[in-house]
Each structure stands twice: as structure tokens, then as C-alpha cells.
Image (cartoon, rainbow, N blue to C red; front, side, top):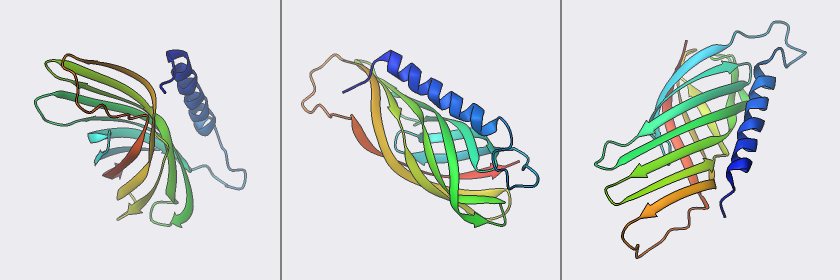
Length: 179
């Protein structure tokens, strides 16, 4: 069951408010000096993340980012996501941050062929871990669930099998570099 456009707008608004709170100032009162926010870029591959490039900002244990992905095939396949991360668990001295993370965001996927199109919007809660090779460079892996929020599709020819993609697994791997 897909949610309507108003519900999607409310979810995006809540995600935006969480980001403002996370980056609005010093969150941890025990920390003597707040850490400097770091910009990062990433490259990866995942289910509905596709082959993607990402850009974001990390501040203490909070992170926001966007990813844009595609797959080089005849059809036009495109994905974009806006995500919020909360880092917890084991601490990396190299990176100065916790390595486990909870990720939640909104993901839009589009596939267009000659006689069809599919446009899907998902909520993508995931859990994952970062492995730091140095203070700036590392690898991350995550997995979770993709929950369908909205769908627009057209198929000129009748499909023999119609997949219900209301819930499906989401997973991704990638490398990142922090500036």
C-alpha cells in the first residue's frame, strides 16, 4: 500500500527537522570542544542505490548526505536519496567517531524504457558499519528494509509477473573519503 503525496512531504519535513537539530549546535554536553564538521564523498553500489556517488557532512555522531546513482544500460535507470545517519557503538580512534550507524532517508528511483516507466519513492531504514583504513579513508556496508511510499508506473504490454515491491531488502557497500 503506497502512501499519498502529503504523507511523503510530512516524512521529508520530519527528516529535515532532525537534520537541523543534529547540526544546529553542540549536542553532547560532556564534550569539551565540539568536533569540526567534515565533508565527505563516496562511491558505492547497492540495491536501489545503484552505482552511486555521494556527498555529505558529518558532525560528531550525526551525518547527512545525498547519493545519486545509475546503471549504464539501455534503459534509463536513475536513483537519488537523501539520508540521515546516527553513529553509535564501537569508537574508532583513527576517525574520532563511532563506527556503527543507523541510516534513514527518502529514496527516489526511476526506470524508463521505450514502452514503460516506473517511478518509486521509498523510506530506507538501514543499519551498517564503517571500517576506517585511515583518519580520512574507509569502507562502509549497510543493510535494511525499503518501504514503498509512492509509486507511478505505466506498462504498455501486460506483465506476466507483477512484483509487489511494498517491502524489499535494501543494502549497499561503498568507499568514502573525508576532507
